[in-house]
Amino acid sequence: MPYRPTERTRARLAAARERIVDAALDQLAEGGYASASIATVARRSQVATGTVYRHFPSKQDLFAEVFRRAAQREVDALRATTGRGESAATRLAAWVEAFVRRALAEPVRAYALIAEPVDPAIEAERLTFRRAYADLFAGAVREGIDSEELPPLDADLTAAAIVGALAEALVGPLQRREAGADALVEHLQTFVLRSVGVSHAHA
Amino acid sequence: MPYRPTERTRARLAAARERIVDAALDQLAEGGYASASIATVARRSQVATGTVYRHFPSKQDLFAEVFRRAAQREVDALRATTGRGESAATRLAAWVEAFVRRALAEPVRAYALIAEPVDPAIEAERLTFRRAYADLFAGAVREGIDSEELPPLDADLTAAAIVGALAEALVGPLQRREAGADALVEHLQTFVLRSVGVSHAHA
DNA sequence: CGTTCAACTGAACCATGATTCACTTCTAGG
DNA sequence: CCTAGAAGTGAATCATGGTTCAGTTGAACG
Image (cartoon, rainbow over all chains, first blue to last red; front, side, top):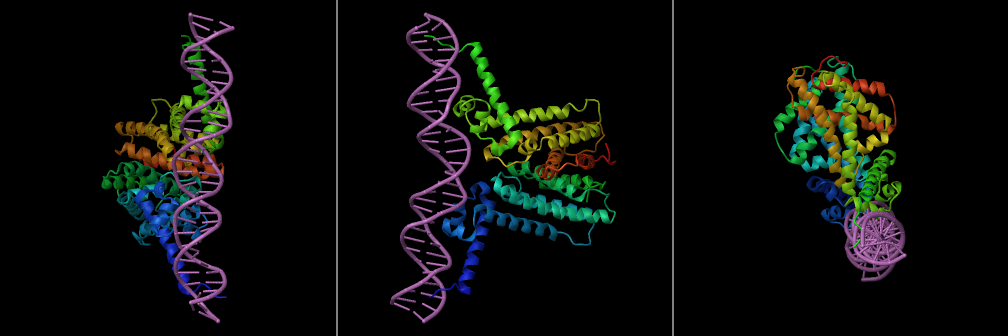
């Protein structure tokens, strides 16, 4: 009565699963969601399409993880640009800059994560992504309010509005592949800082 | 050699076409884009599915017109809330209020027009809708700058950011069917006015 | 080795919904 | 009335891409 999957095998499984998620992430970055069919992702991760279903019950589940992973990565990247001690204005300005520059550096990925149309079932997962950003911004706004650096305002609503503003402002440039990153960064920093009640234009 | 479509017939045709567009608009308002299949729209406008194709070469073309129509209607509604003479701040505040209240009054329609996932081909058309809003806001911003009521800023970028902020801030409330319109209006007015450099909170 | 089952494979299957088209039903003169 | 052709019909067709599954390969262990 032999065969009981051993540790070695379970490691192999985990690696395959990982490869699949990575392949999906890469595919998203390269060709957008439209190009990320199960077949494509499977090919890219060197497994058969059926194997994908051995790791994820459905495409939706796979992409739930993909978006969660991407969100984590992006938010970590923003968070890493500033330390705890800094003022809310400084942090917001740094995050806006990082957001814009990262998006412009990887336009296809950014577009896929932010704005590309996806299946309704997947859209819910992408919300994860936007919410992760919103939570990050909301935290800084809340701290700014607490320290009286910022006027009282609805931190969650404001954060959502900021994320929406950044996303929408980027859609044009992202699709047009146009650069002008410096001006974009500056204008959006001004916009965001003013929107939370910081009056002087620059960070 | 008889039969040449007469005036009467052409009117009938135009009416049918109109009925189809209206049905699509209504369907969007009632069940969102997901519910707006050609078959549904056809049934709703009292014609056979094939007939729809007698008026529009493809679903994409039909919805291009639908979104164009909806955009026109919405922008007209906003524009109607203020006269030429008013200050940029007053106009922006009025438009934000109208935008929010109209959206909350017709959440399904608003969601479909603003944020619901649609086929990629259709997404391009929905851009029309957002751009129509952005153009409206951009106009007011530009005038505000010219009259020195507002500081110099990139009117188009700012307008896009405002539209994105409003849309994103509404997605939560729209999906949750929650009200609180008054607070939402006030907070978003504050957000928008501040973002364009108007410092006092209220309109 | 042999056996047993897990893991893998990829072609076949299926659901969905846009689009087509052979056919029927009108409309406008003659 | 009759006929040419336009307009309308809706069931059948098609395309797409997610999902399944019968068959194959590989791993573990006596």
